[in-house]
Length: 433
Ligand SMILES: O=C(O)C1=C[C@@H](OP(=O)(O)O)[C@@H](O)[C@H](O)C1
Ligand SMILES: C=C(OP(=O)(O)O)C(=O)O
Image (cartoon, rainbow, N blue to C red):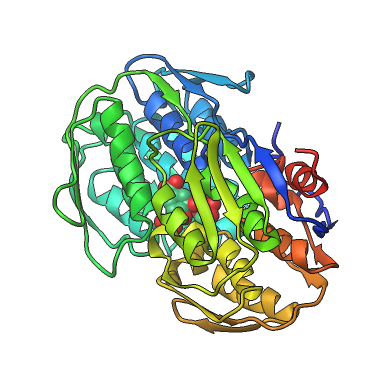
């Protein structure tokens, strides 16, 4: 079982250094984003559902736990299939969101459908993550919420068993999850929902497409033809089987290992057609000197022995920023990563954290308002603070392949999305995977 406690002791870890090009075939667990969506859609559906090969990690166990607290029946003992039987949603209940954006943004609208109060809180840093626009939007469609003055955690949703729904205007520039959180339970709202975004661009477009695609797969009527407007019709959602794809963002550090060591990594079980932005990842890795191919055995990344710098707007794939920044720090030319101001509101302020920690290893990094400029210089070992952020740990592990003595302050934070990370990583480096 993944570690669900916020106060687990830190687990320092020295990243293994690769003496040879890696040559590895990895089977990774399911996508965090697909698992979270499948759990929510299953909890508000009219019949039972099964998730095949879901992600078992802190974020998804917390999501299952939160929905279970509200009354949904969740059987998550079998790693290969989780069974969800919807039941009447009710409070009083408490949802621990941990540090999971998906839980803190997707579960409140489900709580609006529950009868009774549902309280939400999480790790200390979760209280600083943006939530106010979603709270305001839910209030405007009839959900009563007590929240901190900024509209963040801790909060209480006073569910009445139904949500009016209808037109809502929101500034979702801080997180696409605000929009997904409004859409996923909306078929159960009396009037469905019409979400209009007003403000700077919404990041993470592929995650919004995933939300729309999975809603439709569950039988919802969704119109997303007008930019920045999403319409979900009221109606019944059917229970179904959800095939969860391997997590592409979780695979990114393993693919980066192929680039940085000039080796080869194959991710098994990759589907022919995916809800995740594989073409974008392929293009980014190609720009940095890698080759990505989709074969019958899976998705393979081959390093060519060089890592090039990268100039890219990462707004649609911002989860990849830490790993790409790590590659940029060892590249043969400077990099400019832009379009990711909002990742200051992720598990930590990722721009500040990457700036500080890469500089600590000797890189020349300038933090800009919406990204990073990275000029490679010879790096050295040192302590790398991970700030409870799984993707900071991934970044440090990637650099550690090429630089001896990269000491992570804590590697257990990888349990947020991939508890097996240290073991899988070490197996890849020692050639036992
Ligand atoms: O909906 C989702 O599953 C996610 C959306 C994105 O959030 P932001 O739009 O806040 O970046 C992404 O970064 C996060 O890891 C997962
Ligand atoms: C930003 C991330 O997570 P969350 O869902 O907590 O926002 C992430 O996994 O990179």
